[in-house]
Length: 299
Ligand code: PAF
Picture 1: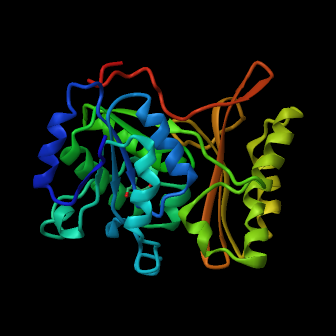
Picture 2: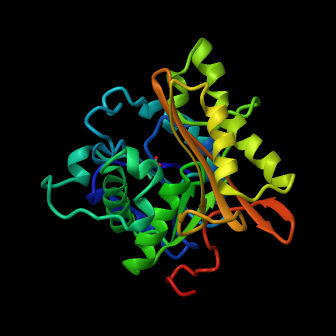
Picture 3: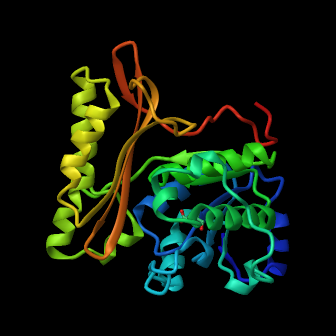
């Protein structure tokens, strides 16, 4: 089987040959692929024919952020995807995705208000606008997103529900380095001491989980404990516990909850999270998105 590499909107017509061979699955990425992306692709190939998009979306980067430095190596990405039975890669230029700049954008809902939404103004507008475009261009039945970007998953989920988009969303688990660091394209900015200090995000989450397992249910106590671990970073951003899927502050930790951390470590802004189901004294790791919705959007 050959993997088609599609560069233009017009070439997407070739995806019609894949429709009807099972649910068409889109795995949107910004390239610089690592094992985390590849695990999403493997998950996707179990569902149906797979399209991976590779597009560094300029509108989700703030003016002071790393758009110019963001790693780009399409040839390497294609080599990593070839053995995985990917049917097509959509790797457009900016002008294939954005016709006239500044026209219609997608305004995120309430779930984008805190966490990364608070420290990266405009970020989720950019993410939703490009994801809406990719869904419109590729017209997949299923979209697969990485759970590491938990708020992104939940903000996209709200867009899909509120705009009645006919796509089912799945969140794939975070893949970690052997020492626990969550895989991220931005990890390649980390060297030496920064790489070691990056582990403080994972330590913050582990500490909170330990406390929850020991019976702690007060979100303030847990956020403070995570914050203490995060102090090893250059600029801790947030250490937060929120409800899933609404991302509301909690009075008490119970039900499905997101433990989320973000911090600047050296040149890299890193995020990590843990999704837990806390019920009747039991604590287990779980996913973010409701997988009961069918491809036509029905519950
Ligand atoms: O998670 C990412 O890589 C990006 O935010 C996405 C979803 C591909 C949109 O540009």
